[in-house]
Length: 258
Image 1 (cartoon, one colour):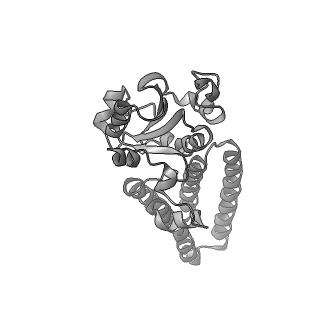
Image 2 (cartoon, one colour):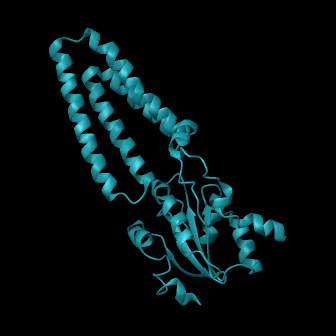
Image 3 (cartoon, one colour):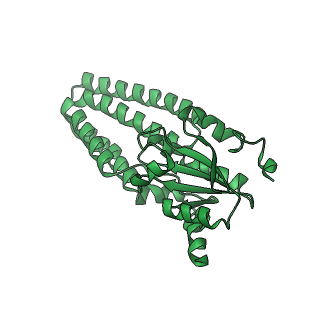
């Protein structure tokens, strides 16, 4: 049972080794979501070079102007999102969304059939692949609902547990995936531990924790000796999670837990 308990509470730092010197390049190459998008975006250069051969000089100039306008607008939006977004996952999600919109708009100048082909391609990607969550270092234990119940029943771990219940098919959970890991690195100690339960894999267990899979997600629940103390389940409260201690909604600071 001791070995099983140790396995259940394995921190994310031991789940994934981040020694890769080019993590983003590795992510683009290995993740179908990014690889497929990259293929679609680069296909535009092939389509364009083939189409402009039949264009008149005026139409070619019109296309070039629309492309420059799209690039300028894209960089303006990217700069705004870079400042406002809390996580890289959220920033990338927004950048991809804008890129697809501008690609569709520019493709309409070439031919509306090409534009609709891109729409279909993006729809297929959304069905076949999903943007991966942050999977970097942290002190958050990856748990199943059963493992969480066993930890609480045995009572041999930390007095306090802050559990993130997420559904990764939710864009909000995806954007917040980095935040909880960062919090666990900053505040994890002998008194409080952090855990993550993906209810997307265990939908039947959501009712046991009084969580709706339809939202709002993610849901953060603070347990004191296996008893729920409080929870945050509103997207509007996410900024307070990102900028202050996760315990301030119930306690003054982590030190006050002693």
